[in-house]
Structure formats: structure tokens, C-alpha cells
Length: 266
Image (cartoon, rainbow, N blue to C red; front, top):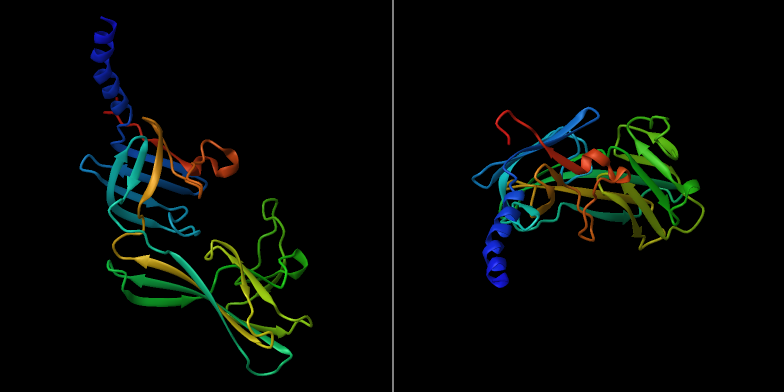
């Protein structure tokens, strides 16, 4: 008799679990002067829009995209049908030109567009918004920042290195006295700091390119969200696969979306 009762209630339990994961509707978050929302439609399509951080690049800009969603347990999959693509790439070129005592540095941000087959269409080269670099060692005393305007001094700005303010992509200066072994470069477009080994220590012109790759068939590709409950979704997944959950050090409200209540919501 006890076995019969257990079997009878198993389907009911499974149904309740499925009902708890109903995500149809609009989820959003509001931050300081920014907002992000995603609408999950019953036909398994979604609409993602934000005036805050781009879902792929480390930039604050307007973004809107439609796509398809699927549910796997407590995980939402956005555009699972699209193959993964590389969004950020970089390279460094070196050459010997001009005076041995002068050093020339060129920093390019190249925005590239690709079609649905991954074929290159076009590119636009612009100045990197704010870039830090250092030769041989990544230490505060070695770091120089290149930017179109000065970094604002405030409580949350952190350490601000010496700055070169320019609207150009190429700068020049006196060559360091030590042998050049490598150059460290960090910027939002690169999504971190990377060390590039210098092949020829006698090189005096270095060209750094960071590429932001845009794809016509979708920028949100095989992205995962974690469902906390019927009203909250976690959006920031770390490299180890874990999600940031209500952590004030990880961005707080920016890492979660809450259901937008309507008059017809239950």
C-alpha cells in the first residue's frame, strides 16, 4: 500500500517541479542609469535589450537582439542552436623603423563583422577607449595609460597610472634603456591584461590590434541563465560554470533579473 501511494504521487511531484520553472514573461533589472530586460515568449523565442553592459563585450552600450530559448532542468539556454564563435582576438606586430632611441606604439580596436557562415564582411578601426601598457613587468611604476581624456579621480577609481592623453591611435616616446622582452597590455576591449613576448628586442615600432567580432546571425550564442525560482534568474556564469548568486562583490543587481509583475500575473 505504501509503494502504491509513492508511485501515485511521483507524477504530481514532477508536475509541480515543472510548474516552478515557468519562465514565460519579462525579467529585468535596473541599475544606475542603466537597465536590462529579457522577454521569454511561449513560442520559445526571446527578446534581449539593455542600455547597460553589452552581453558579450566589456562595454556599456545599447543592445537589442531576438533569438530562441530552451529549458534544461533549472538552466535556460539562449540560442542553443547557434555554434560558438570567438568574440575577442588580439595580436602584436613589431618592426624596426626610424631612430633607435625612439619608440612608436600603435593601438587599434578593430570591429569586424561576419555573416552567418563566419565569413568576414567588413571592419572598422577606431581608438581603444582606455589602455594600460608596461614593458617587461606589470608593476605600477612601469604602467602608462593611453586615453582620449583623463581618468576621473574618485573614491572608486583605484590606482591611476601616468597618462598620455591623445585622440590618435599612435604615440611615440623615448625608448626604455632596458632590453625589451615583453609588453603587457590591458583594456576593456581585450577583457583583461595579456603579456605579448617581443621577438626582436631591437624593434622600435609595435602595433597592437584587439578585434571585436560581430556576427549577423546573433551575438548571444549558447549562453546560460540559472533559475533561482519563478521570479529570479541569475545571469552571470563564471568560467568554472558556477553562477554569481546575490553576491554584492560580483555586481549585485546586475547579475540577476527579476520578474516584472503585471496585472494578469499570478
